[in-house]
Amino acid sequence: MATAINTAASCKNFINGRWVESRSGRVAERRNPADQTEVVAVSPLSTREEVREAIAAARAAFPAWRDTPAPARGKVITRAAALLDQQKEEVARLLTREEGKTYKDALGEVSRSVNILEFMAGEARRMGGETAPSEHPRNFTYTFKQPLGVIASVTPWNFPIAIPVWKAAPAIVTGNTVVFKPAGITPLTGTKVVEIFAEAGVPAGVLNMVLGSGSEVGDELINHPDVRAVSFTGSNDVGSRLYASAASKMKKCQCEMGGKNPVVILADADLPLAVESVITGAFGSSGQRCTATSRVVVEDAVADRFVEMLVARTKQVKAGNGLDPDVELGPIVDENQLSTVLRYLEIGKKEAKLLAGGSRLTGPAYDRGLFVAATVFDRVPWDCTIAQEEIFGPVVSVIRVPDFEEAVRVANSVKFGLSSSIYSNDAAKIFEFIERIESGMTHVNLPTVGSEAHLPFGGIKGTGVGLREMGRVAIDFYTELKTVYIDYNRRKPS
Ligand code: NAP
Ligand code: MG
Image (cartoon, rainbow, N blue to C red):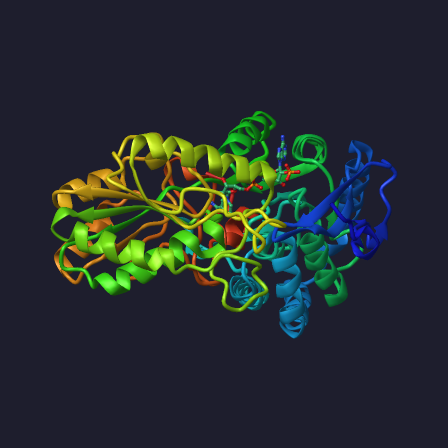
């Protein structure tokens, strides 16, 4: 395989306001998943010692940043929003080359990150508490919010711009300092995020980044005694261990993890709309989104018609390099994820009826990349492996049900609870679904994917623990609440 190593970006750590080479001497190469001959980045596998240096820098920077007035901190985030907005096309292209999602999806992610920054900048001026009447005369009571200290931010590869931004922005605006570890396979987009904050004027030590493996850099970061809180997004496997470890050290912790998101299609649904929604939700970002549509729960009365339309549309989905504007389905992110997806396809062929896709794409257009065909399984039993486990690939399972009651039961029959959707025009059933569906976010006549910058994001059950991210509530994770009692009467305690 030809290499283009000389044109690849060489990534560095960012510690105490400076870009520094790792001393480890070990590196990882990141190749474009749509064209494995292109090395996109070479990044260091940093050492535990380097993580400790970053934590020390963050700790030292904390008092001055904490004491910087919140509106002044907000102005830095405002500048970051403007800088990212100016560079959004370039950043989106980088994201497509490194992670693989289509340019349209990449631009969507970057635009959403700009929105998050704009919203969070304003939070600087809204960091208020509450005042309350006291039980005692001439007494005043109130609450206010204070930053925690050093925050660990550990993020996945699938939204390598938006997730780091939605963690760093509220952490920084509230006066914390951050050590950020991006996913090992997306070092260059992680670097871009830090460059933007640095250029926006985040002072030295307030935001640091250490590149490297989860087992070394990630592990040192979350377990270090000077780290007060851990914000993690990623798999259940890593998140559950990390949560236990952080809890044992009494660290504040939030974990956003996997999903198995259902779209429920009732007999009265607008079927063409529902089909397009499933295509977007299941195959957008190659199904590699925590909110991806992975189960379609459809009422028997319309199941045959719906499946026929879905399969016809799925067969039109064009796979390829996400920089090609006609492409709807980009590659799988890496060899590991590819083998996971292929393994589930084989399981699915035994458990259900394969109607479209079902294998790796081969041939001259695909051989340099890691492509899997858009896949539809029909007549999937609700409790089988492909209906229960997160696949994280362009695979959708159709589960047929007799009625609304069974649809709700099946939709809730998984351990996850991130997103969901219903297609219907029956107001009573829609409201009942909204009430009974076990997910942190739900959509009506919309895909399971998609969220807005000023609204909370996150899941319940096995998907998420800790406070929600994004929206105003994001601030609560990054602050402690202090309750104050003031006596201006000089009364003797009774
Ligand atoms: P992952 O394997 O769990 O990795 C997430 C992050 O944790 C990476 O930075 C990883 O580093 C790091 N890590 C790994 N082992 C660690 C350890 N022992 N200690 C500390 N950190 C460690 O997840 P992923 O494969 O990147 O992402 C896919 C998963 O993310 C899916 O399950 C998806 O559903 C979930 N996700 C959830 C949401 C949500 O909001 N609910 C959003 C997006 C994605 P390395 O990369 O170096 O291993
Ligand atoms: Mg992983």
